[in-house]
Image 1: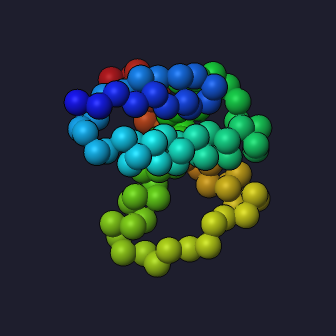
Image 2: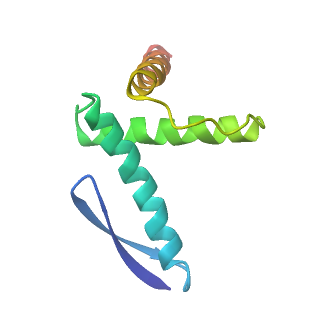
Length: 102
């Protein structure tokens, strides 16, 4: 098993992966880092856990669109990113509130 050191949001993590998958793991970390950078660029700094949660939700939203066979859209403009991030964040907070009330 290989060990890869990745850096996300200024933090370094050592992660195990199958031999030969090191480059792939590095690319996945870069994808997460790109989402975090986007969130921070639109004023979304609010703690490490929240940044990671929002990045995960953005990736999940993109995956959902792909699974629905929606054509790949051009990367959203800053205003569109802000609106999409706000919708995702609001929905995540609704889900969290529902879980706390249950």
